[in-house]
Length: 345
Image 1: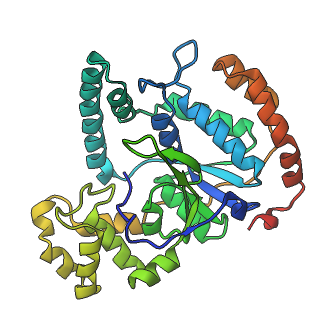
Image 2: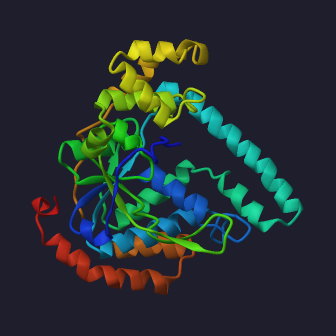
């Protein structure tokens, strides 16, 4: 779902070259959903192989990942584990959104409205266990390490950056910041041109880096206050937050009452909006989210036979295109494999 922090965080545009040789922990579910919702046919339908298996996420994952590997980035993919129990409300909302989108999609199909079809189809996206497993198989064949988070993937990527196992976390969401991620990288998977909504024009998308220390300094808040600000505006654990209070109003309230969090939540009548969910439960969930050190970061040689079997034989990818990608990767993969782990920080 993502925090609504876009208008209040400081950021710096960078180029992919600035990340050359750096280890980046990727919020995998966030990335896969991006590909699944955007890589579709003209009518909004997902791309599939001849057996009807969805391939949109694999197409995006293979093309973008290999492109970043060619540029010398050291990627490690982190997958979600068991979500906190209080996230149930978010799942219910997401299910409702998908159901409404499915109805609007049917209406668009009946009227042959392709623009609306594509818009609504993306909102019905569902990432299945089989699709996730195929993504993991693809990454393993590419020789990339996979980390299984005990809970939220973005919390695990944040932890890996905090303890120096990675330079930054790659995600489009700002949630990493409330999990204490020192360095967040956005737009890495969508770099390039993107059509402006409702127009024929394009906007240029560039990667950007967001430093937690800079955000806290600019907003003049502590990490705990940032978490409270997120709760007021709405997190994955209390979608929508407090009606009428966005990040800017929430920030003003925090400046007035400081770290008297009980006073803050009393003033916004938290118990009236969330009678069965204490704000402290959300706060503690974010602060104490489970993470793990049980992982190894090892980049291996690309397993070309496994890759061809998965993409070409199983999912009807073009063999020529896959091999062309592998040829481009060959020299870079060899060069990186000769470096020690310490070279990538």
